[in-house]
Image (cartoon, rainbow, N blue to C red; front, side, top):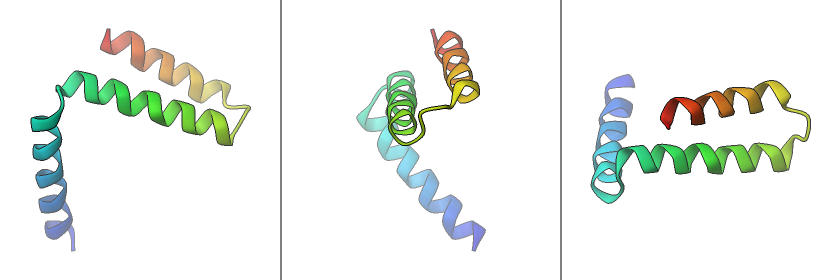
Length: 59
């Protein structure tokens, strides 16, 4: 049911926008994902480069 899913996603995004500044939240989310992926998979050089590009883009 895509309509229900998109409605829940919009509600969650609205709550997060109220709780955090959007840019900070995005950076925090990327950082958490980066640490989590590094913990699980050691050899992710390509993905690491993508995350570096994300950081350059955000700053």
